[in-house]
Length: 369
Image (cartoon, rainbow, N blue to C red):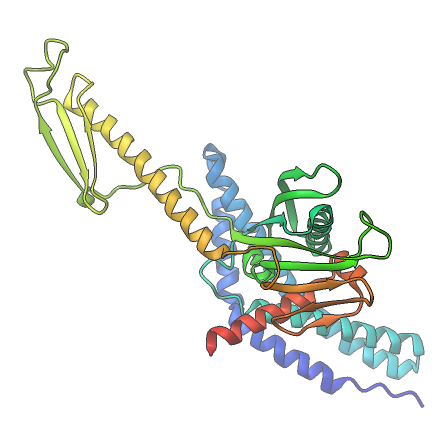
């Protein structure tokens, strides 16, 4: 008699899934979707194109997150029904299907569990990844292109939107560098563990036959920051001084206190304006200049933050975080987590989830130590 008992396995998955949903807070997620849906339905939404894009993108991400959770819940229910049917019908095909679904659900829930570990300030943001060929000549350029394809295939397999923003091709083969964006929930938090120096060992297709070649490539991962197009300046942050304009001008220039000097107290930035005829016009012009300077300062600070998050990656001996070995044996090994597989072809084709999950758990342990 055929008897399939997966109750303990299913109960274990349900317990893990319950922990995940408590962290995700499905009720708050639904409330956020409702709020964003209301904003997205406003008749004047597209009057501000940039704001509209942010709202619709955020709504799409939240809906995808909720859909993923509800689909897992439904699949758990369906799995229990499938096991019951398999036992009632004593059908070998149904048994195989149930075991296959259990294995797939275990993987999906494991990935979602890893996502709950992503609680950094920028983890929710889209990611911008830059790959640069390092030491190793033409082999390094070819390796950089292999890594680019690997990450784009990973994004494609997960249904994530990816856009290549810039590519610099090498003369003989491969690329000198490439930059691309992955727009998905928690893209930065997920892919940030891929940052570092990657090493390839193989028989070079470009050099002498039978000679092994070691080459390097650097992977940099930064969050895609929101760029403010205008800066809100509270009245309490500025001091406004008016004074009589000097120099040549119209009849009202030197006879009234029309010139304006605005000091931004938090930064010490000072803007003076006396070209316009009235104090109101000079103040408005000075505020525009002040806003532009503050926006530039903000972008410089964001760039410094990105650089800090990206880290210093040299793409050479001594600091590699992962090795891809194609000869004399087949192996990909992460030197931080010790996670390894013996199928480099699958990894280069985008099978990275095991390495990413191990990296996220490794990073979490490091921060807790």
